[in-house]
Length: 322
Image (cartoon, rainbow, N blue to C red; front, side, top):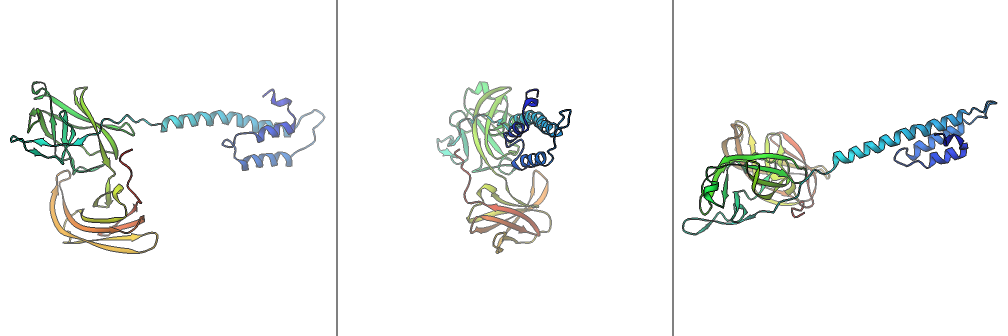
């Protein structure tokens, strides 16, 4: 600051104008400069300039604020920096073989051939326990080192690094052509995206592969339209399931789709009601089936049984091959 005291008013103003735009925007700079000019007074006989004090005070404030903003920006960058992990080898669907050598479960057995696999649905959906309620685990290797061993499966979300224990179980002797197996269930995946699944004995990883988990299903209050949000694109959806929680439900349900952009609405009928008790909640639910047509992308409102939820119909699905 000692160097600044030797500058003329004009030089001080020039310094002020050179300040970076993100500390003081243009309007703030102009206001300070105008204030300085409007309040300019002649110097007293003691050489004391209130104008100079004002300018120096403004510069001092900026010099104090700039390091703080810089440090805050650094902290923000660290907070928002990616904590992700590298994606493991992507698994694949492959067949198991029965005692007669016939291939089975070629569309549901997913993993790394000759190493490890899981019986998985066609799609995994975040926050959903339906597709992971019963999962068969198969391992290949030395049966003497596998059977009766305790194993756990850890899931690591690739983008965020979030880790959750998916399941833990004891291995039994092999089933079909595998050397060890177990029947278990997964906890719902907390996030959509790629997950690395680690098959672990204690803290040692036996094998690892990645799976893709879609965005959650569309929820309308106590109603679940069983289409992943990322699959909600323009087109026709046939034989879609609509799950409704509650008692004394009607035999058919109307789903109203209202466009928030052009004010048009359409109604779709869901029927073929099937009642059951949901294992995870012990509550009664009914499953309906119907078709739904999404003519174009945009913002909509879905209403079912007086429950409403805004949804976005996208132009395309996000790429799974990123």
